[in-house]
Image (spheres, rainbow, N blue to C red):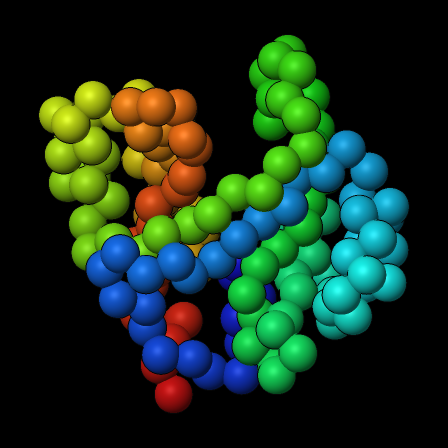
Length: 143
């Protein structure tokens, strides 16, 4: 999500707003081809990552998600299937994680910083539904 400069500027998402989605794929090129052909997504590469990350837009020039290939380093030996991950904007990732734990959630990835993007964590609700929370850096949305 670090290459927002070439996309049209959007308003900073509000607390609780779904703001991003990612496709974690076993084969990046196959996923790229499938979603491009099926939905007409405009997909472009982000050269600023340590791994290949591609953005897709909503058809109006606004980035709304990304696609990346699952690697053994990411999955740490676990059999992680391809999946979508929904990101929900929050005012404070650490406070949201604390509150989610208090309410019975399981934290799959503790809060961590993403260079040039913000801070995020991955949580499963008490029933097991997995999602990510993120506090984005304001300069990503500044004019």
